[in-house]
Length: 128
Ligand SMILES: [Zn+2]
Image (cartoon, rainbow, N blue to C red; front, side):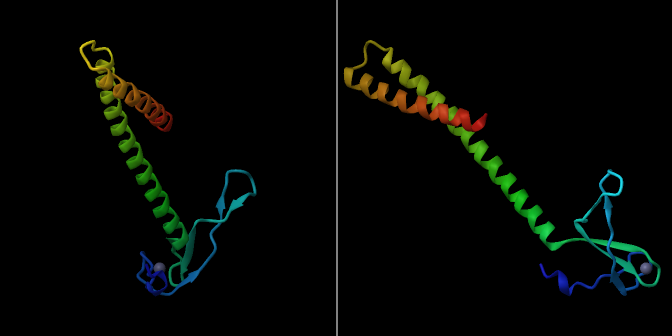
C-alpha cells in the first residue's frame, strides 16, 4: 500500500487540486471534538470535501480483523477437540466399567480418563 503516490481527485467536479483541511468530529458533548480517524481534503475548485482513511487506521483494522479470524479458528479447533475428547472419554469409561476387560486395559483406561478430564476442563474454560 503506497498511499502517498495516489492521485486524489474530487468526486464532484473531478478537480485534482485538493488541499488538506482539518475536519473535527463532535463527540456529542458540547464543545468536545475528536481527532478524526480520516485525512480530509477540500477541493480548491468546488469546496467539496473528500475523506481518506489514515493508513495507520487501515492497518489497525486489518490487524484487528486478523486477530478476530485467528480467535475464531482457535475456538472452532477447541470445539472439535472437545467433542473428540468427550467421545474418547465415553469409550474409556466403558472399558473401566466392563468386567470382562483385563486389569491392564482398565488401568490404561483409567489413566487416559484423568488426562481427558483435565483436557476437557481446559477446553471448556477456554470456550466459556
Ligand atoms: Zn471539486
